[in-house]
Image 1 (cartoon, one colour):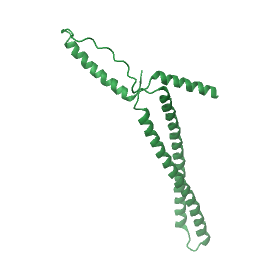
Image 2: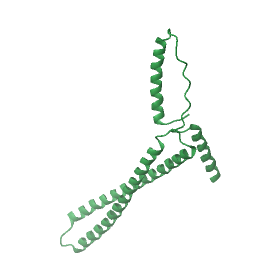
Image 3: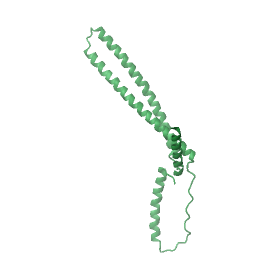
Image 4: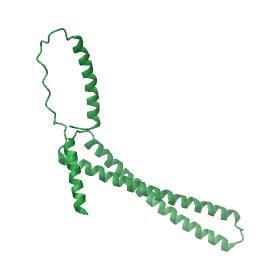
Length: 174
């Protein structure tokens, strides 16, 4: 038994065609058949993944899921850091508005806070560039996985065997 979206679509199309054929054959039931009954077509294995290919696809799917989780965690951390920068900006704006132009110590304190804010912002920008690059790499890897792994059918028995292998390996690792 195989299971992929393209197979489900093919099965649905086959069911529609079969229903049409049944309706036609019911109408033509009175006439004797001149052709030999159709033989079941042998199961096509041309587009079927090998167990090793399926295992590689499953492993890649797991790897991509971990990367996706890491990207999401980094995005949350960056959102927090951006909020910190915005809070620092608001505090600096408030202090600038209330600063006495003759207060040299106040000007120096604001200059120091601006330097600290710029350091936090630069760290944010560096992390953001890295996250965008990681996201781009993830997207490319996911697109390659989709192309390689979702366009082909697989045997559900192979999937079950791989799941048993993984469960056994996880038990041995403990």
